[in-house]
Length: 108
Image (cartoon, rainbow, N blue to C red; front, side):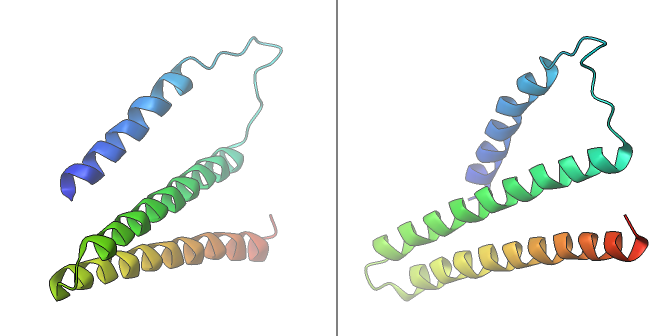
């Protein structure tokens, strides 16, 4: 499983880095972005990546359920995958909500 996670992570990085490196702006088109806007953009990307990874884990859990053939160990492993994916999504939503709550309280 570690190999799958490592390969998915390296694939995501290898796809996104050239796109970031090739992004060019002329001086007239250069974005005037503040640090908070940049941080907001980064957290939006990370949240999207979290949702994609959670979906992949749920698909893997479905594969384990289908191939379990009644084996209690494999079904427990599949349930754990679903549980951990859902916990990850809930933590992500809680973190994102906390950021918006603090921003609202701070008046931004």
